[in-house]
Every structure is written in C-alpha cells, then in structure tokens.
Length: 631
Image 1 (tube, helix red, strand yellow):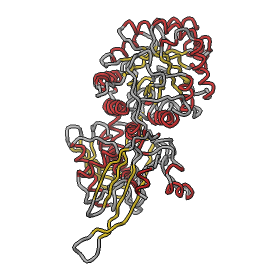
Image 2 (cartoon, rainbow, N blue to C red):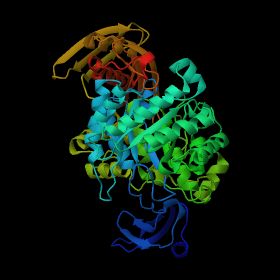
Image 3 (tube, rainbow, N blue to C red):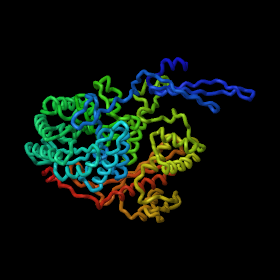
C-alpha cells in the first residue's frame, strides 16, 4: 500500500500509514516495530518511520503542483499608483487603526509594534499603523513602526508600506506625514464624507465645498513630499454615483495614487458593491492611473463577500483586519478574504492572488486575540476553535476515510497543527529542546529568556497533567509573552473561602522597582476578595465590565484562561478617528493557569497594567467636530 501511495500520493491532505514488522534482537522474541508513513500536502512528501529502536526518514520529490500548496507567485514590485501584474491584489491591513477602535481593544505601543512585526511576517502589503493626530501616544507608535518595521527589508526586497490615517485638514495630514515619513515606503490616507446624509447632518457643507477640500488636501499631502496618497470618500456605498465620479476625478488630478471605496455602514449587497466598482472604473476620468481599493464593514455580515465582489470587479487593494475586528460589527476578515482567494482565485476569480504567507495566519490571529482581548467565536471561519473540529459521526467517518470529504483547507496551510496529528507528545520528561521544537512548529519564535520562562511553567503543568497539549502550550505562551509591560506583577496570593465564613484574600504584588506590597481584603467570593486586595495596593480606580473564563482543554486538570474588561476614570480617553469625538477607553487583560483564582488575578493585573501604560497625560487635542474639515 505504501508503494502505491508513493506513485499516486494523496493530493489533498496528510496521510498516515501504520505497519508492523519485526526487528531481530538478542532476546528470544522478535521486537515489533510500528512504522508511520506520513504524507504532508506539499511538493515534497515527508516519510518518517518511528519506533523505540529505529527511526528512518527520507524525502520524495513530487514535481506535480498541488492546489493547496501551490507556491506563491512573485510579488510585483511596489509602485504606488499601479500594479504590474493585473491579477495581484494588495492586502491593506488596518487592524492597528480600525481594529483598535473596537470597544475594549486598546493596544499599548509595544503591542502595536509586535503586531506590526507579525503583519510583516504575514506579508501584508500595507500596514495602516494608526491615526497619528489622535494622541501623542498614537503618533509615537506609528512613528516607531515606520522607523523599524517600515525599514526591515527581506531577502526578496519586500518591506511593507506604513500608512497613517488623517482627516481632510492640514493639521491631521502634517501629523500623519511626520509619523510615517521615516518608513522606506510611507503613505498618507486621507478621507472626507461624500454621502448626502453625511454632507447634510455631519459636515454641513455643500458638494462643491467638499470637492474643493478633498482636492486641496490631497494636493497638500503631495506637497509635503509624500508620493503615495490614498483618498477615501467616506460612506461611498450610499453616495450619489455622479458625485463620486466627479470628486474621485478631482483627487486623481490632485495626485492621489489609491482610491479607496468604503462601504462605511455595511449596507450594500455583494452584487451592488461589485457593480459600484464596475461603474467607477467605467465612468471616472483618470481612474486607470490609480489603484482601486475596498473597505467593507460587516454590519450585515457581508464584508468578506463584498470585498471579494469588489476584487472580482477590478479593485486591486483590499482593506481588512485580523479576525475581522473593527467598528461596530467589524471589518472584512483578512484570513477569510485571503483564504477565499487562495482556494478559489484561479477557478472563480479570474486568477487573483495575494502575497500573504498563510502559514502565519493562526499565530497572527492568536496574537491579536490576546493583545486586544477580543475573543473569536468558536465557529469563526478559518481561525475559530471549531473551524477544523468534527463531532458528527457522519463527518468523522468521512474524515477518517479522506480528509477532503469535509475540509476544503488543510489546517497546516494556515499554521494550525492538530495535536492528534503531531509526532511529539510532550510530558513531564520532555526537555527544553523538544519544547522549543514544538513552539517553532506552532509558529512561536521566542528568545532564550522567554523560552526559559515558558519551560519552567510547562514543567509545572506537566507535573500535574499526564499530557500537555498544544492548547496548553499556547495558553502558557499567551500568558507569558502576550502580556503588557509590567507596572505591577503578581507574586503570591492566598485565599480562604467556603460556606463557613467570609472569603478572604491576601495578595502580594511587586511594583516596577521591585518593591513588594501586601494587602488583605474580604469579599463575596475568592475572586471578589482578591480583586479588592489588588485595588488596595494599586490605588487606581477601575470598573470591572466583563469577566469570562474558559478551559483550554478537557478534564478537571485543564488550564483556565480568564479575560476581564475594565474601564478607568475619565482621564483615560482618546479621540475616535472617524467622528472626532472623545471616547472613554476600556482595557482588557488575560491570564492563564491551572488555579482559576490565580488566572483571574493575573487577568485583572494585566488589564490594570495596560490601563496605566496608556499615557493619559500625552493626549494631544485635535480639531473639533465642527471644524474638522477646515483647510
């Protein structure tokens, strides 16, 4: 059977063949050998034979192309206003700008930099790093990303464009340019509303006035030395077509290189949005000299479908976020759009492709999930916990016979390694090298200090569990690596609780200087008393808005992950990029551990750390709503 598979290998997924043979030994009985032949869905079939006494491996070359792992076509040279390959679609990621506008998704500067680096590893073409005019902290974060990620060129010449958002006024545009100009490929993205309802009720300006503002502000952005200027007519999905043709033609003449067409309120259907792109291509003078982009909100659950419809109609840039986070119901999801193009680009979408390295999708998704505290629902496409889980007996039967019966995507394509397919089982006897190899397979690249910390946490868990799963490891990494800069650190906690008396908690925290602080409090339960003890030490008013806990695996010995969402006092506020209004910020925190109280306190301290890391005194006021479009 093995030889027949070598001649005609499975074209979809990994296949494992287990055989038993016997190896002569010095004992009186032959030793059985279990041999595992594992075929990975790639151009090289990896075969490994494992037993306690024998391990053989070899690689068999297969020149035939396999659909799930077809090598990515070369990324075209970056030119702001055109793409040399007509089938290439640029991926514009706005997780750090629109995504951060999700309630509770506040990110620190360090977290933004980490995510930007991961987005570069993923291979996005443009990173919208933030709204520099919102605050000094936002400005510094965008500038740091421009200076670092925006100048890190890989061996293929790839370096992401670093973009800053601005409204159509000089102060915003200057601030955006001052932040992004340090990047090798800087971009300014400016916008103004064009729909009748926005013109009448929000801007209180005529169509002619808005055209003049848009034209002059794009020209001003170019005058600063920025050769890559994107313009968005906000609420284009509800704007009058003839007016769109006119204003877009004017900004093209003023020097815009990309025209983004946003469905700001998520109102259009895929057929409508595709037709909008078609009409703009046919009726806007000069549009052949720019790149058309899409930005679709998910209010009706159609953002992915609308984005794909726009690309099919001729748009060659897609604005998306990791996990689809963003204002209200969110944005088009990067992982959904990219995998739809990868699976169906050749057959349905006319040969479209992107430059995304999909193997980093899961890691990027997990990082954004942990940093923002925005948990993905289990049934979320591509990255949800149930996306590759099969419980139905009929489905399980089909999967056992051929994985292609119920899976259209091989999980390894997005960087997901199912624990029951892994070759290494980690336990209390596993060493540092085995853990490091497993972390690498899961997509984590940790430095020696981080690895050492994770290793001892792993050993502690392994002493209490028979087997440590991938989910356990991911939870431990998230708890150690994805935490904000420590202002306070949990050292010890002691809880007394039950039905015989009041719950009492004693908590020991260390401050940024290493000084230890101890407090004791009573409460209605162990978590309540522990949180009150933390409050006595930190002395920073906060309101607990949400508290949730999940077990990452089955069993009474499962690691618990806790998420909390808190809101600070009024001094923790920032400016909404779209409305210009001051909004009170919320902050999330996560913790993991086999003790649910410890996990809960870690999450609360993490949220407090994030809140205090937010520089409340660094806010820089920006133009008010009534003069927000003044030149």
